[in-house]
Image 1 (tube, rainbow, N blue to C red):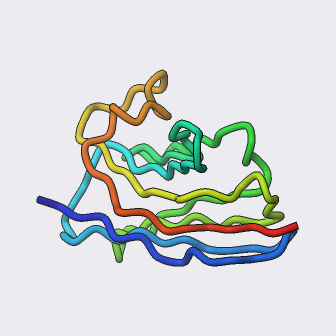
Image 2: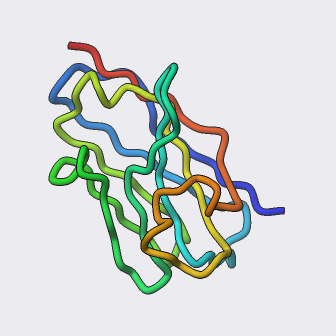
Image 3: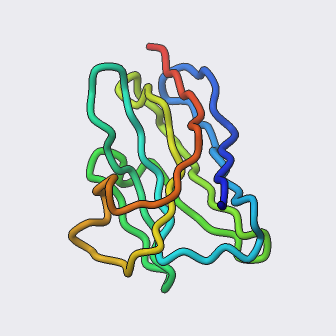
Length: 126
């Protein structure tokens, strides 16, 4: 069973930046898509950004222009550069991967993803 390990969370003031990383336990792991989700207390888990195996990257409207998803193929690592952070970005951030064929309509649907990390907390203060 492949494990996804996130790192890079922390506390930052509004308008600050953080960079999250996600590294699979198997270097040869090659899912059809990787994604970042987040979940704030009392709210549903929501998709933030996704990259398909073909390299297409999509963002949620709430983070577009502020967050940048990237993938290092050599390290098989996934990153999320978060800039201009706002208190509303406070949440637990999860890395996810799917072995299902990429489906644009399901790109931010949690049940489409088979593998999940344990999450890393991001707290943004005003």
